Length: 163
Ligand code: HEM
Ligand code: HEM
View 1 (cartoon, rainbow, N blue to C red):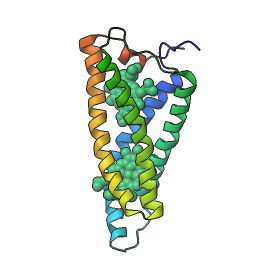
View 2 (cartoon, rainbow, N blue to C red):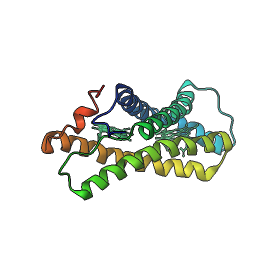
View 3 (cartoon, rainbow, N blue to C red):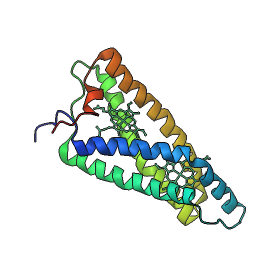
View 4 (cartoon, protein in one colour):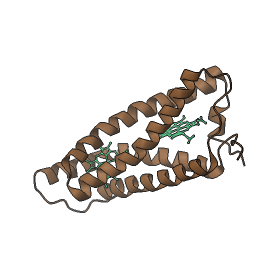
């Protein structure tokens, strides 16, 4: 199968929907950590739509990410810009791989803590959310650098579908 030259409309929508959902997870983090603190003290937690949105939003991120990965496996990935140094290509692939891994492990660790009461999973969740912030920051800077400094089509292909 020939290598695609860009992303499909579905892949692009999935990328930006997941970005929005991740932002919501961070913006609405407080009710979730408050609820978790109460559970830690052995107190009961009343139903809260904001806590439910963290749980279901996170599970939705997991499902959409698995869908996205399955499309990527079937279709392959567009090549990185020509003439890009090998080290930069490795960094791009590594960043994307780590992002996919975090989008899967964050919900899984959250679910293990919330539904299974597994405390180390909550600690891992806390560490991974910081790693996600750092890696997304690098990813964002790389996208901006590609667009404005290197003037490649990398940003455009995550906005405009190939098909
Ligand atoms: C990609 C998806 C997710 C992201 C980005 C995310 C992000 C976060 C963030 C930023 C916090 C706040 C931590 C703090 O303020 O200390 C948090 C806490 C928490 N999340 Fe998630 N979360 C995700 C998915 C989930 C899911 C699916 C569940 C459960 C079903 C979950 C359960 C929890 C729990 C129990 C806490 C409290 C743990 C603690 O404060 O140490 N999370 N999450
Ligand atoms: C929660 C935040 C984000 C996550 C988790 C995320 C995740 C990803 C992943 C996993 C890929 C790899 C796609 C693939 O080839 O399979 C990707 C590609 C891309 N992302 Fe993001 N992203 C985020 C935010 C952003 C932001 C804020 C921007 C730009 C302003 C951006 C721009 C891009 C671009 C341009 C590509 C295409 C790279 C290429 O074609 O080589 N992303 N993103």
